[in-house]
Image (cartoon, rainbow, N blue to C red):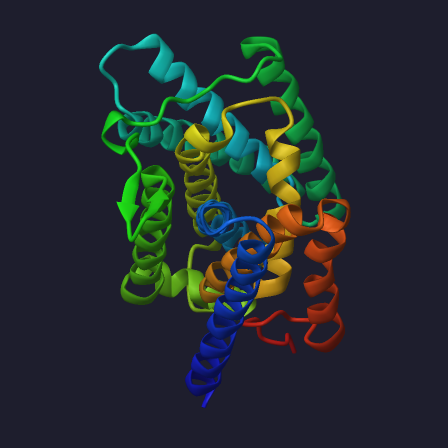
Length: 321
């Protein structure tokens, strides 16, 4: 019964995404041009893909550790800066190598943060939130000191610089690559959570942490593994989004609120919720900014308020006992 309800919500949410996208596409086409509407649709998909990569790790950390990790946006920004620095410092290094390197570096940093700082505050949730908020400021100031205040562009891989032409429309190739990477990451995370021992332990910890401890699951090691996984994905996503957004001061503050909205909308600890919620927010934010720029944040936060009012646990979350 639970799987049937989840499938129904998934279908309804995907239909909602398609309807929002179709409505925005039609309206923008009528007041601007079809080409402009196509670009906005691809911007929505690319933003949704980046939000999923950021929000999936955030949701897992929040669901397992009950910790609103306010450093997660800083992980995204730090990954973008590290990737940009790798690409500028070493000739012949491609974006994918930089993405892997930045992801590993940010994952190690996240593991050290969890092991030596957050674990000491395991019984103080407010202290954890304050520490992660302070750490985000520290990371932001460190990036500003090391790399300066000017945006650092991340070059688009040469293979994806030429646009695709289909039915008279021009598609930015790299944005489609970002969407495909997000889908591949979603499949990989699904297989990890549903088909591996680590995934079974993570799901057990999300569902009932006390019972997980009782049956012998090493919850402390699980916390570190999940924190490193979420941080690494966020860091790699920062590099992947670099050719679209660049690396600049304030990138963390721009991305973290969107990730929070995705988690609340989709449901804490739900991978499907993070995936669907990311593309819903991607469409709403992109088309809302294009159509009503003065009300962009009203349009963005309104779905979250409606969901909280009628389904506090999110679209795919489960009500806690």
